[in-house]
Image (tube, rainbow, N blue to C red; front, side):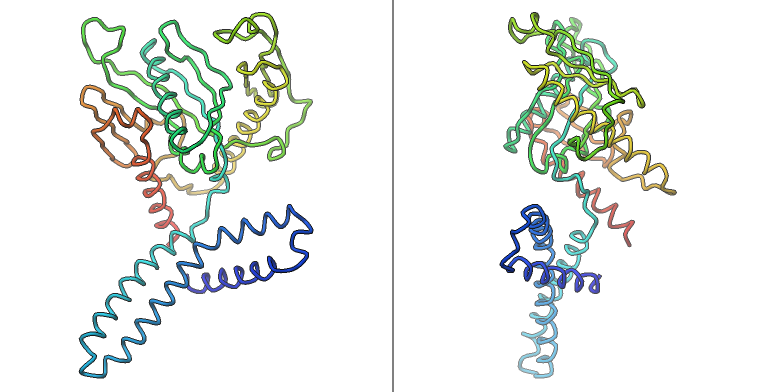
Length: 352
């Protein structure tokens, strides 16, 4: 690892030197790319410098231990420096792990009611509210694409974009089946029912990120349904795109203009095609790692929300919290931090 760190330090020095060149900003796109790389390396360099400083402190303390009068003091200094170096070593191991190239992207999320009829739709609405409140806490914006309600205020399906730098790095662990145990609003006998909703999380891709042949797309327009004002029933502004080679269908009806809805559909289609390609590549790798935090597949039950006991359980890492009301109000960081830590630990184990 130390040899690798030396290489990183050399690359960082090279980038710093290039940033000081008079013509550095002659190509703005290339300059931005190099600055991003430099910024990404800075935390590693800072930790590496602290690691080397701790090593130097250890060596100096060891040299002075030969003096009987200094021995006890130097032993304490040596031990402190050693503990600091060990902590920095573990930190550097994590910093050197390969990063998900999509971590900084915004996300497209899809929520669908699952097993449980109207109660599953009401739970899907609760999940949409939870993620919307989490986005608000982070200063991210929520952009609706499709939102189909039931008569009782549940959600049959909700497709939306959460715009914000790093949204995917936090929300990518949410893909899967979410199970709820609670007394439904429609239950008169007070019995606890079990229902499910599915969540899918995709990194938002632009058309330029994924090659899409226009000839492969069939576009349909129709009148939007649901609330939204009188214009909804008068114009065919809603757009449905069908990708003929894969059979993928995406739709958007939340914008007033057909052009805007088509633009959103294209972003969603690009993200879905990217997901298919990633899954195809992963399936070709022998002995594919099954992460401790799960595969993220939509049919995998990942979490249970037990309302009578105010208990949330994440089955992938065995985490149980008794603060369900807080979680449903968008306070997800404790869960996501635990999932991210487990994911890092699994990657670190496989890297060794």
